[in-house]
Structure formats: structure tokens, C-alpha cells
Image (cartoon, rainbow, N blue to C red; front, side, top):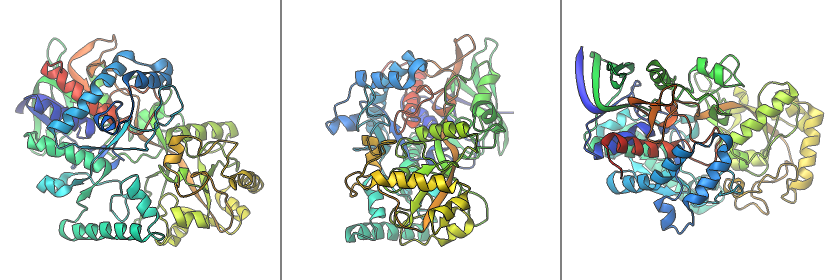
Length: 566
């Protein structure tokens, strides 16, 4: 068997793996990244790319008043009895240092979400802005030929394949038919997109998670770090003292034994596509298949199984095993079902959600994680299928879109024909099409409208927090998240539970070292990203609580393997 020697072997090529690799390479360690899929980037490349890191340098430069004490109080409140003090302290101490390290020593540069609030901003230590960062847009041409191996973004959240940024850019797309400035802005972007497709076969203006992966990958390549794709890890290798010393990797040229002198880092993306572990840990998926994930097909829990094979244990005690998000299933041209995660439309005025009973169950503009928890709880109470429906009228559908249905002037009739978008001339007709009690749905909408005409929602308080309002329509007064549902035809989209990554993962310590069943570090074995148990205690405190810790603990793991303290 061929043998390859390095200091650090990283298993997985998402943000956590690449952040570990570039941090270790900066410390003059010889690093190899292996990825089982033909492309690199993992779930990160398909994601929004946000990173939750309190007290970061961009926020300080913007004059935002945050502190470690505030962030600690917020995390203690959010995690409850699952507060892991040593890991949380490590994250809060290293997070700002990691951001400065990436800014100063890599291609990774950040933009601040100036109005991106914590998801529970009124909780102790919560903030209205400043803790969520996103990678600055990146020109894919800087990757050279490696751009061909970069995982493309999730098709469902692009427009004809064009990536769209959050914040002001998204507002331009919503206002394209009402503002000459927005029309010019969008038109210019679309022309650049068409140029890229003609010359490169894919967009070169990389945004969100695609930009994050591209920037980290460029930094790795600049430092001479190879990324082997189509190279799954078959098994970990231990010495006679139980220390992990490398792995057996399957490659196109046959199996290769990798000798890793400093450590092996598991960063394979958790288990969102593993039906066996989903069955065990997802209460809404009793067979393991009642779940829809936008994660890549390769995220099947390899890292967890590799860790368990050498004595590691998975923390399955968290109240939520994953970050939940409502998913709808648009029909693709080939007849298969896509996965559309609902981030923005929930907050728009004139959109409500109901279960099969026809009743609302949640503040629709609260976080997607909270939305799904409320949906599951109500459906269990009603002993009905675990699903819900967004309801909107024609005006709202054409102004903001709904799910995979884009706003005007993009046609929408094909979605009615495919069965993705349900339509009814009256509320009662719509209710019949989606299997919802018509009388109750009528009463729900009438009761909602009574207060919505004044921008009020006394039942659930939609639009009551800074996070709610940040994703509403700032031009709609007095409440950017509330408007009555007035005039037919009326529309509905079915929602099921999906995920944005798994929380249950390998137990680790504050140095990202994987622990055995007695809580002792397994020599030579580290884990970052969704392979490691979440430090958020099974909750979802803010935008980027998977990727923020991923890039931070990547920095921490590299620091520990190099023997440094800074």
C-alpha cells in the first residue's frame, strides 16, 4: 500500500476543515485535506455562509458595543442546562482572534450584517446586530482551474443559477419592478452572470457560503495545501498506545495510508443524510426518511462513525439533534423534488402559516429553528401529519414571491401546474386543495386581518423583535412583517421539517480534541464543524451558529496541534 506522510490530515472540505487546514499551514505544519465527493466545499458551499462570532473586529470597527460578558450571558441563557463552560469560553476567547487571523493572513475577508440581529435579541445578552459575519463576495476566476472542483451553490436558492446576496442586494431584487435604481442594479448583475455562463459555464461572482469556501480554499492552495477529492477515509489508524496516527484513504490510484504526525481532524459535515442516525435522533422522522435536507448527499455521518470506531462517543442528549428549518419541495424539470429552505419569506407582510387544522401556531418571523419546533409541537397536539402551509394572497405572491416561486415579472404558473404552489379562488377552495379545514382557515384569516390592518398581531407578535423586522419589508408601514390577506386568488405552499446541519456530534473538549467514553482526549484525534457536538446546547441563538464555531475551532485545533498558545 502506498504511504503519504503529513503533519495534519483533515477529513472534509467544508468551512471547518478548510479553516483548520489554512490555520495549520500558516503555522508551518504540512497539511493534507481529503474529501470523498468529487467537489470540495461540503454543506458550507450550499449555505448562506453566515458566521456567528461575538466581539469580532468588523463589529468593533463599526462601533458596535459588544462584550464577552454579554455573549457569555446570551449563550448561557440559550443553552440552559447544556451550557458547556470550557468550550464556550474557548470559543469566546478565540473567536475574535480567529477573525483577525483570517483577515490578516488569508484571502478570507468579512462583511458585517449591520441589521442581522441575534434570533432572541431580547434575551439576556442578546444583540440587535454585530455578531453575524459573512464572507465578502469573491471572484471565482482567482481560483484558476480549481474553480471546476468548487461545489456549486444550492440551485433552489439561486435565480437561474445566479447567487444573490443578503441585505440591500436582496431588496434590489424585490424592488426590480418598482425602482429604476433597483432595475439597473439587477440588470447589471444579470449581464455579468450571462457573461460568466458564456465564458466559464458557471457564475464567477461568488456569494455567501460559496464565497466562504472559495476564499478558504484559495488560501489553502496559496499555502501549498493539497485537497484530494474522490478520496473517502476507510478507517483510522492507531498505534499500540491507542493514539490516532493516520488513516487509510481510498483514492483513484488505490488505497493510501496517510501518516499524520500531529493529528487527524474529523470535519466531514455531520449526519444530515444518514437515515439510520436520523431515525434514532429525529423525533419527526420515525423511519429516518420523513425529513428533507439540503445538505450534499455525501454528508452521511462518516466522521461520527470514524470517531466511534476508535472509542469516541456521540452526544445524543441535546434537546434538538439538528438545526431545523422549514423546507418545501419544488418539482425539478426531471420530476425529482428539490429542497427549498425558507429563510426570508416567513417574515414578509401578508404571509401566515397554518397546520392542517387551519390554525396558526407561531410567530412566522421568528427563527426557522423556532418555527419548526412550534410546527412539530402543534402537529403532535393535533395528531396530524407533521407539516404546515404558508398562506398568501395574489398581491403578496407577486410582490415578494413565496418559497421557490419568484416575484413578478418571473412567471409562476408552472409551479401551480407541478403541484408545488396550490391555488384557490376563495379561502375555502384553497383549503380544499391542501386538506385544511375550510371553516377554521376562514376564521383564522379573518381574525388575523382584523388586527393586521393596523400592523398588529396580538396572537403571536409577528414583527415584534429586531430579528423579525430585519427580514420584513422596510417600506411597509407600520409593521414591516404584518399585512392583511385580502383578495384572491389565494396560494399555499406545503412545508416539512428539514435541517441546516446536525447538532449531535462527537464529544470534544475546549481544544477540539475528541473525547473517549471516560471524557479523556483520544490522542491525535480532533473534530470541528458539524462532526463535533454543538456548543449551542441544541438551540439556535443566531445566524451562523454552525459556521462561526466551525472556523473558530478550526483555528483552535491548529493552534493546539502546533503547540502554540496564541
